[in-house]
Image 1 (cartoon, chains in turn green, brown, red, blue):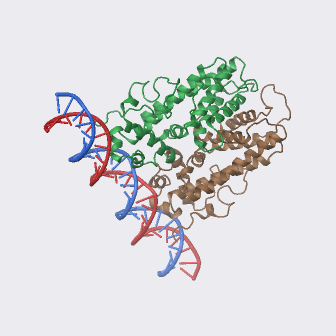
Image 2 (cartoon, rainbow over the protein chains, first blue to last red):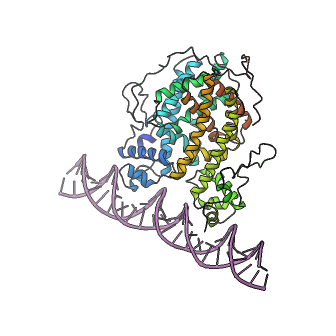
Image 3 (cartoon, rainbow over the protein chains, first blue to last red):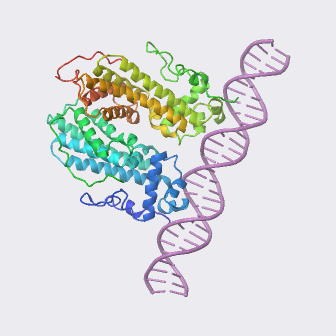
Length: 244
Length: 244
DNA sequence: CCGCTCCCTAAGCGTTTGCTCAGCGACCGA
DNA sequence: TCGGTCGCTGAGCAAACGCTTAGGGAGCGG
């Protein structure tokens, strides 16, 4: 009666929630969480992301989240059953987004080198652009409840499999030279994820630039000929998504 | 009176504390913190490392730390003034160790490729071998008090400078091909550090193996010819920089 | 106008938190 | 034998925590 499963839009059918239907076309909402239905629930989610990223889940109080959203502490519990559910929604949506980014990049080309470059570029760019969200998504997993944790871990395994698949294909067709495919895939993923830890908005590099740098570094890591691909970075063009 | 600055051995002269005098020779104590003087203080430090690594600083209670060390909650405050001071000691000793590992590796050879390989190998190996400690050292910084935080950040900058220095030398003598030295140095450091996040003791790879893998990956990232693998030509063969 | 629903708040619940303090037993030089 | 120090404990304090509950006011169909 009070709050059965949190906000309807986020907890609804698997494809509803934040990122509508592959709206990559034109002006999609700048910040994620753009379509969480009760407006107050969206503000609370956004406030929680900021607070969790800044101080960590355990150091964040429900009073802090509520006041950032301009509400009383009790208002939180109208939209979410617990503080942990807030983290779970953030984590779930973020991981689904990660998997989708990798999947789309993987489908954007046929030869492994282009697929790998596109995947790393898009993945790294997301971690830099949305580093606040990504920090929570990637580094607060251990605060999830047991059931939620296992669900999220399954999504993470999907990401790892996609990346490993690209490396396997690349080795198979002779584009890559990799001795330890599984270890290298893990290292690449780790390299990309850690961007969320150190990236700051005021820095000298844009997310786009870091994406390009990292795509090049990773191609070198797998022994792909690097000089060949000059400016082939248009698997999907995007708007000027530079601000939140 | 009660506890002025914590345990004397840790807070003593800069070179005392945990890792005595370059005991690289034979059977040095397996765990770090081997020489923290009051035995109870060492047990508390060890307990804190475990607890912080497992649940994070904020989710760890002083009662949990004390009970892991087999003591009452009050005993903690005989050796440390606050819970944060425990974290500070762990962080400081860990970062000093990091800088020393990088410094020694940097001095272990003359040509940049060997220096880079040795640095990455040793740094990664430490993060895997002592992943419990390293996890606290690398991922709980934000819980430090302001004054302690700035002190630690200075140590981290030292690490970054050492690595950037190697890359600059390598580019200068033509061993490396790196467009963005600063960005690449950051990426390499990030790659190594993140080992502490995902490494588990039961895994299929030993710290030694991961160190070797990562040294190879990083040499590729900087465009250095990798001597060991495959049929690549050999400009200068690398010494046996495998041991430590 | 009524009466219902939906959001929201003020107040506060029971618990846990970091930390304190009086005191006690073991040890030790005299 | 004795007084003093050291390391530690049992009990507990004030504050902060996650979360609950009773109730109020704006909007709206009738």
